[in-house]
Length: 168
Picture (spheres, rainbow, N blue to C red):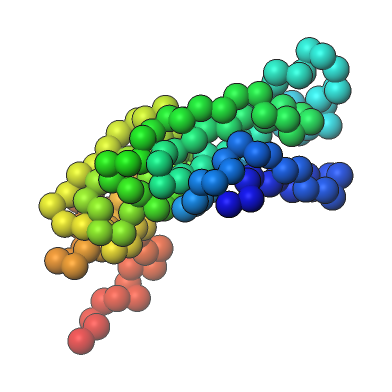
């Protein structure tokens, strides 16, 4: 309940924000944006870059999913609630490739977002989730109390599938 802190690896310091004070954080994803130059060495500290997004965080709390964007000084330049979590009470974020997934234990829905916070898709099942596995091709395997379910047929989650052949 003390707010949100990020660690600036290059300066070896923590920066504290009071943005999420008094909110219970269930899960968080943070990442640096990939620029056309490929590295932040090319970012010059000037007024023009004051609103350039160099990092993002998605923070899942009991009341919502928040998107926070940072400039090159790790100052918040955009903060918004992108999903109201009061209906489903999701607790988990899972990242795969260029997307992330919002889900929760015993919930029967999965939300898929891109890394800009746009809702891409949702998957709804009959049973509550116990676990989630996402393949490189973004096929989803869910485990529930009633078994395993796939979003696509014949999805491959095991690189050496022959390891399971001839098992008793």
